Length: 276
Ligand SMILES: [Fe+2]
Image 1 (tube, rainbow, N blue to C red):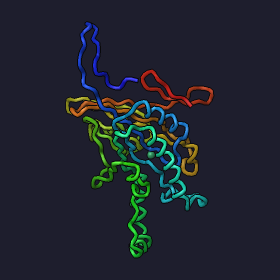
Image 2: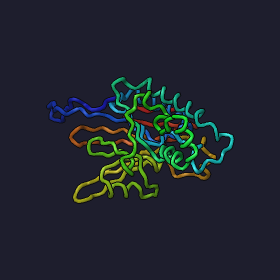
Image 3: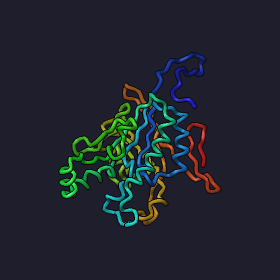
Image 4: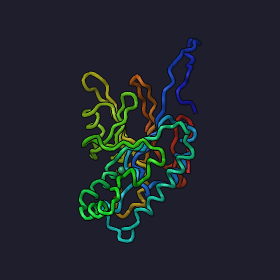
């Protein structure tokens, strides 16, 4: 697989020097423990070949189901630490295949925000932990992201964190409507998000310049979370590959996961494909 050619042969037969781009592999909305196991296995194989400069978990890393207002499964009410073991297993899988030099970034999503809200609205929990001299948990301390070598991006004031790849801002996303991608481009210019769980791209001219927006889907298995996903959702599984440089340039591939017949699933990148 070729990512960023150093030399490109032009039709005239001349060798033309081009700058090598950096690559970021971006996965959002994995919602562990609801992550799609088959997809994650294939994704790890892909990451091993891609050797990205940056691996970015773009929010909703963990579902935090038990502290959600949607939580209604009594049997799972006390299983958040158990669910975290599933996340650890998936994190170890990706950790094994990424090059040591790969920078790992973890951004906060709205599901991570549940930890803050849970602590905020539970004065009794807060008081007793403080009395016992215990530190209040945060989403990233619960997931032990420090141990896994992540550069953690928490809220910037009231905004969700934005990470720049060239002129592209990657953030978790906020709006959920069908028009979210268009809204985001008009409001903030070049950007890529997850949150909506849809996979889309959109471009329009703002102030005389073309602006590009992307929604990079999700990586969960909705069949695992039927306790709160009741109807068929308009969602697509996908992840993002962003090539960029320090001069503002970026290009985004939203890699779609599709049915491949005979009950199999597949995604492809360039001319390679991964199937399970
Ligand atoms: Fe999500």
